[in-house]
Image (tube, rainbow, N blue to C red; front, side, top):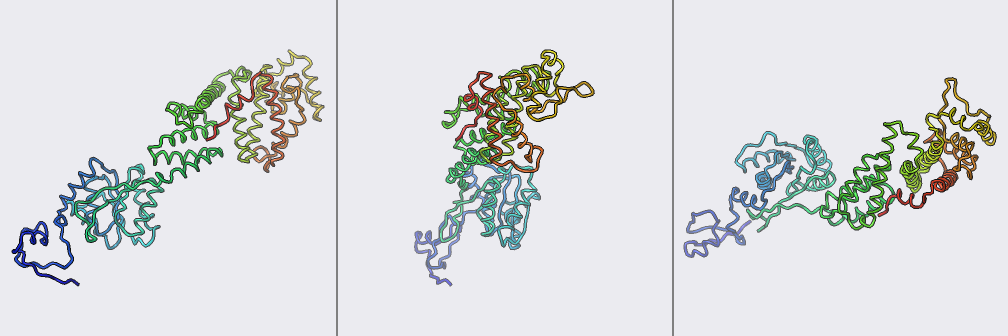
Length: 490
């Protein structure tokens, strides 16, 4: 309820200016106003003037797609559409605001665009907001998420909360209009477009710490996901993009996606590295070169007939052996003993394949007749090895078609023993036989159970013994080799 005072506005131009409504050039001699009301001339600015002022503040900025919540504030929605010129607009409306589109269009002196989306629902909870927002995003599935802006200025509380949370999760852009107020009313023409700060600007360090923990735990896929998100959200920190690239390269190398890993590592090293990576730059460059050598080796063995000569070249197989061994150690650190044993098994097999190749034997397609011609006592020597392991003597005999079966891991070491190869001079074949038998019971090999940690350690002890002997033969420092294929820690 108001009390009214009467003023004679003809008595004073100063009094007339203080109590008249701006924009009204007609003044009576006696006018009535509520006591306590401060009338501001700017409160009657027409919408076209407000839009012009808002456009000047927005500048050249435009939007591809805009999502608005229906309310009683048609000015807000009209300002955003008029200034940002979005190609697509969606309205989340309640039954009470079903005609919001028409009111907004009227503000803009136009008809509602037929492409505008109108979603009407009772937004009694946040889940309803999510459902309606999802329907809009599915209809706009051809757009990238960062092309969609969500206005947080108006709407019910569930709308505002739901839209803000969903935008954060989905990577949508958010905006709102900030205004000046007088007597709880918006001052027309004071509207300003605001981009809310991304919480990552404050909490990014917490996410980066989690990404670092995942990286150092060899979970490179999830580490890259967080670093990639940080790189997009905190653009001024260029280090996140580089760390995401490194995590991706390591994840690709871990799964032997060599072509992709080489490309990613080259992309990383083409940049000016952040300090944390710059101190490791020489190692990273050496790892890039190792990936490239391994890629060339695998491609040569796949598309040419150089298998035997490649396998006989220790330098050619070192990148593969290093990748297998380092990968096994990472799986061991994660207590994934079956996978680690599988990789160690392949390392053990690769070393025997290399030594057999130096004798002119390709394990996949062995030509043992030629080998037996060069070493007439080989048959007897091999039978002696069979007897020492308790096997029934079969010797080195071909199949009925005159061909020999591919040489398995254990048979390979038995043949090397018969050849008196230096790789097995100090190795007890019974240890290889027993440890390989345990590995074969793994669910990832031929069995139906997991390897225990004790069984795994026993198996690895044999692999380590053969590795030491292997590096003694090729006169290469094992320590330097292992360092090259060990992924860096952050």
